[in-house]
Image (tube, rainbow, N blue to C red; front, side):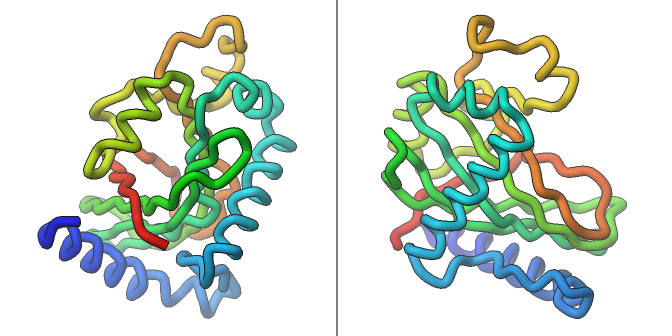
Length: 191
Protein backbone atom coordinates (compact mmCIF):
# COMPACT_ATOMS: atom_id res chain seq x y z
CA UNK A 1 0.00 0.00 0.00
CA UNK A 2 1.42 3.38 -0.96
CA UNK A 3 1.99 6.21 1.53
CA UNK A 4 -0.43 8.44 -0.38
CA UNK A 5 -3.13 5.73 -0.25
CA UNK A 6 -2.52 5.15 3.47
CA UNK A 7 -2.73 8.89 4.25
CA UNK A 8 -5.95 9.26 2.24
CA UNK A 9 -7.52 6.23 3.90
CA UNK A 10 -6.64 7.53 7.38
CA UNK A 11 -8.01 10.99 6.57
CA UNK A 12 -11.31 9.53 5.33
CA UNK A 13 -11.58 7.24 8.37
CA UNK A 14 -10.98 10.23 10.69
CA UNK A 15 -13.62 12.32 8.89
CA UNK A 16 -16.11 9.46 9.09
CA UNK A 17 -15.44 8.87 12.78
CA UNK A 18 -15.79 12.57 13.64
CA UNK A 19 -18.92 13.02 11.58
CA UNK A 20 -20.43 9.72 12.76
CA UNK A 21 -20.39 10.71 16.44
CA UNK A 22 -24.08 11.74 16.28
CA UNK A 23 -24.93 8.21 15.06
CA UNK A 24 -23.59 6.67 18.23
CA UNK A 25 -25.71 8.96 20.37
CA UNK A 26 -28.71 8.18 18.17
CA UNK A 27 -28.39 4.48 18.92
CA UNK A 28 -26.67 3.29 15.76
CA UNK A 29 -23.70 1.60 17.39
CA UNK A 30 -22.68 -1.03 14.82
CA UNK A 31 -18.92 -0.76 14.25
CA UNK A 32 -17.63 0.18 10.79
CA UNK A 33 -14.59 -2.03 11.29
CA UNK A 34 -15.01 -5.65 12.31
CA UNK A 35 -13.17 -6.62 15.49
CA UNK A 36 -11.84 -9.90 14.09
CA UNK A 37 -11.78 -11.83 10.84
CA UNK A 38 -14.38 -14.18 12.36
CA UNK A 39 -16.68 -11.20 12.99
CA UNK A 40 -16.16 -9.90 9.47
CA UNK A 41 -16.74 -13.36 7.96
CA UNK A 42 -19.96 -13.80 9.95
CA UNK A 43 -21.20 -10.25 9.26
CA UNK A 44 -20.55 -10.67 5.52
CA UNK A 45 -22.50 -13.94 5.39
CA UNK A 46 -25.39 -12.42 7.37
CA UNK A 47 -25.48 -9.34 5.10
CA UNK A 48 -25.57 -11.56 2.03
CA UNK A 49 -28.45 -13.61 3.47
CA UNK A 50 -30.33 -10.37 4.22
CA UNK A 51 -29.80 -9.22 0.63
CA UNK A 52 -31.09 -12.54 -0.71
CA UNK A 53 -34.26 -12.19 1.40
CA UNK A 54 -34.78 -8.61 0.17
CA UNK A 55 -33.95 -9.26 -3.46
CA UNK A 56 -34.28 -12.75 -4.96
CA UNK A 57 -32.47 -11.57 -8.12
CA UNK A 58 -29.31 -11.18 -6.04
CA UNK A 59 -29.50 -14.82 -5.01
CA UNK A 60 -29.98 -15.85 -8.65
CA UNK A 61 -26.91 -13.82 -9.62
CA UNK A 62 -24.88 -15.49 -6.87
CA UNK A 63 -25.21 -18.85 -8.65
CA UNK A 64 -23.55 -17.42 -11.79
CA UNK A 65 -21.07 -15.05 -10.13
CA UNK A 66 -17.36 -15.90 -10.18
CA UNK A 67 -16.92 -14.06 -6.85
CA UNK A 68 -18.83 -11.70 -4.55
CA UNK A 69 -17.50 -8.67 -2.68
CA UNK A 70 -19.59 -8.10 0.45
CA UNK A 71 -19.34 -5.00 2.64
CA UNK A 72 -21.69 -5.62 5.58
CA UNK A 73 -21.38 -2.22 7.26
CA UNK A 74 -20.29 0.98 5.58
CA UNK A 75 -20.49 4.16 7.64
CA UNK A 76 -20.95 7.38 5.68
CA UNK A 77 -20.90 10.81 7.31
CA UNK A 78 -20.40 14.35 6.21
CA UNK A 79 -20.91 18.03 6.74
CA UNK A 80 -19.87 19.60 3.40
CA UNK A 81 -16.81 17.28 3.40
CA UNK A 82 -17.54 13.65 4.03
CA UNK A 83 -16.52 10.12 3.53
CA UNK A 84 -17.39 6.51 4.03
CA UNK A 85 -15.46 3.50 5.22
CA UNK A 86 -16.06 -0.17 5.83
CA UNK A 87 -14.42 -3.55 5.50
CA UNK A 88 -15.62 -6.62 3.69
CA UNK A 89 -14.81 -9.98 2.21
CA UNK A 90 -14.31 -11.44 -1.24
CA UNK A 91 -16.15 -14.74 -1.44
CA UNK A 92 -15.30 -17.41 -3.99
CA UNK A 93 -17.26 -20.65 -3.99
CA UNK A 94 -18.92 -19.51 -0.76
CA UNK A 95 -15.61 -19.18 1.12
CA UNK A 96 -13.66 -16.10 2.15
CA UNK A 97 -10.83 -15.60 -0.32
CA UNK A 98 -9.54 -12.17 0.81
CA UNK A 99 -10.39 -9.03 2.78
CA UNK A 100 -11.00 -5.56 1.34
CA UNK A 101 -11.85 -2.07 2.48
CA UNK A 102 -14.19 0.40 0.84
CA UNK A 103 -13.26 4.10 1.03
CA UNK A 104 -15.05 7.11 -0.43
CA UNK A 105 -14.31 10.81 -0.01
CA UNK A 106 -16.82 13.46 -1.03
CA UNK A 107 -17.59 17.14 -0.82
CA UNK A 108 -20.57 19.26 -1.62
CA UNK A 109 -24.01 19.85 -0.18
CA UNK A 110 -24.29 17.09 2.41
CA UNK A 111 -25.03 16.83 6.10
CA UNK A 112 -25.70 13.81 8.25
CA UNK A 113 -24.62 10.24 8.70
CA UNK A 114 -25.82 6.81 7.71
CA UNK A 115 -24.81 3.21 7.47
CA UNK A 116 -25.53 0.74 4.71
CA UNK A 117 -24.34 -2.52 3.17
CA UNK A 118 -23.46 -3.37 -0.38
CA UNK A 119 -22.47 -6.40 -2.41
CA UNK A 120 -20.80 -6.54 -5.82
CA UNK A 121 -21.33 -9.72 -7.86
CA UNK A 122 -18.31 -10.26 -10.12
CA UNK A 123 -19.65 -12.09 -13.15
CA UNK A 124 -16.52 -12.51 -15.28
CA UNK A 125 -13.03 -13.90 -14.76
CA UNK A 126 -11.75 -10.56 -16.06
CA UNK A 127 -13.48 -8.70 -13.19
CA UNK A 128 -12.17 -11.11 -10.55
CA UNK A 129 -8.64 -10.88 -11.94
CA UNK A 130 -8.84 -7.07 -11.96
CA UNK A 131 -9.87 -6.99 -8.29
CA UNK A 132 -7.19 -9.53 -7.33
CA UNK A 133 -4.35 -7.85 -9.21
CA UNK A 134 -5.10 -4.12 -8.96
CA UNK A 135 -3.75 -1.75 -6.34
CA UNK A 136 -7.31 -0.73 -5.60
CA UNK A 137 -10.40 -0.67 -7.77
CA UNK A 138 -12.19 2.63 -8.16
CA UNK A 139 -15.79 1.82 -9.01
CA UNK A 140 -16.56 3.47 -12.32
CA UNK A 141 -13.06 2.69 -13.66
CA UNK A 142 -12.09 -0.77 -14.89
CA UNK A 143 -14.72 -3.52 -15.07
CA UNK A 144 -18.24 -2.31 -15.85
CA UNK A 145 -20.43 -2.15 -12.72
CA UNK A 146 -24.20 -1.81 -12.89
CA UNK A 147 -25.92 -0.67 -9.70
CA UNK A 148 -29.10 -2.70 -9.46
CA UNK A 149 -32.06 -0.62 -8.34
CA UNK A 150 -35.77 -1.34 -8.82
CA UNK A 151 -35.74 -0.16 -12.45
CA UNK A 152 -32.71 -2.24 -13.43
CA UNK A 153 -34.05 -5.27 -11.54
CA UNK A 154 -37.28 -5.25 -13.58
CA UNK A 155 -35.31 -5.64 -16.83
CA UNK A 156 -32.57 -7.96 -15.63
CA UNK A 157 -32.57 -11.71 -15.50
CA UNK A 158 -29.82 -14.29 -15.28
CA UNK A 159 -30.22 -14.84 -19.03
CA UNK A 160 -29.67 -11.15 -19.93
CA UNK A 161 -26.45 -10.65 -17.94
CA UNK A 162 -23.83 -8.89 -20.04
CA UNK A 163 -21.85 -6.70 -17.64
CA UNK A 164 -18.74 -7.50 -15.58
CA UNK A 165 -20.30 -6.76 -12.19
CA UNK A 166 -23.63 -5.97 -10.52
CA UNK A 167 -23.87 -4.04 -7.25
CA UNK A 168 -26.71 -4.01 -4.73
CA UNK A 169 -26.95 -1.37 -1.99
CA UNK A 170 -29.17 -2.31 0.94
CA UNK A 171 -29.86 -1.89 4.65
CA UNK A 172 -29.67 1.91 4.72
CA UNK A 173 -30.04 3.52 8.14
CA UNK A 174 -29.44 7.08 9.15
CA UNK A 175 -30.01 10.71 8.45
CA UNK A 176 -28.53 11.16 4.97
CA UNK A 177 -30.46 10.91 1.71
CA UNK A 178 -29.29 8.62 -1.09
CA UNK A 179 -26.26 6.40 -1.44
CA UNK A 180 -23.88 6.18 -4.35
CA UNK A 181 -20.87 3.90 -4.61
CA UNK A 182 -19.46 5.55 -7.73
CA UNK A 183 -15.93 6.72 -7.03
CA UNK A 184 -15.55 4.28 -4.14
CA UNK A 185 -12.11 2.72 -3.95
CA UNK A 186 -11.94 -0.94 -2.99
CA UNK A 187 -8.51 -2.14 -1.85
CA UNK A 188 -7.21 -5.45 -0.58
CA UNK A 189 -6.18 -5.41 3.07
CA UNK A 190 -4.26 -7.83 5.27
CA UNK A 191 -6.27 -9.37 8.09
